[in-house]
Image (cartoon, rainbow, N blue to C red; front, side):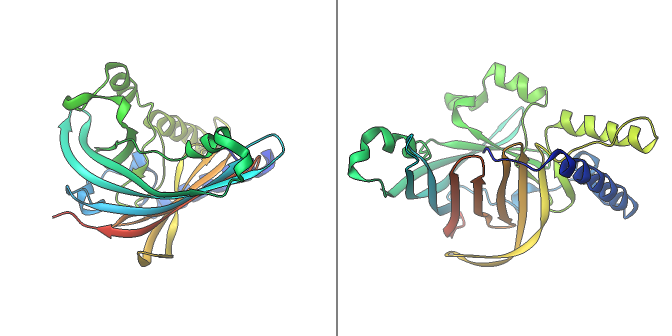
Length: 275
């Protein structure tokens, strides 16, 4: 997730636009930061999480694999299935199993196993979790939890309590324009207040935030969706894009790195709701 970003002048302009939009939205009684939103929501009505719910994705990942600039590409499918739900102090924990298959690459035979290892790092067959905490959903790897008890490891639980984790989704979709770690949002909201009172510079909450871009039409092998919420996470390297459909889940992902060649795409090819 590294991509060359815009110039400093562009960031300053984006900062001003961001703050202006925030004020306008406030006048319309909607929120810009997710921490300003006070409504409650049943996330399960938006994100399917019944045991047995299954998504199948077609994936492609390409990157430079050696010093001579050779580009390697790997393609595969993975099946993600909800296999359990548990309650822990931090919220509702949804466990998903992952199975990867139909793996193929386009590397020349003379590139050998080392080059293939570079590509195969993109494929994850590890189980993972969704942690539902209020209106937020966090995508977390299994190694953050302790075995059958599904408890967060002590150090991880403290980091979560200290607001160090970035939520991946905020519901209801579109109710807030941006979301990030609680501390980051609180700090930027305070900067916005000081700026409004003439006591400080304009905030620049464009980096390391998820941003709700809008609702779009997305075509996938699993069907055409007219209500796909386009979400973008901005970093100094560039944005990662996700398209989420309420009642179905993520239907598409896309990432491209400008600084060096890294490109990753994922699209939904099948979906089955749990019983």
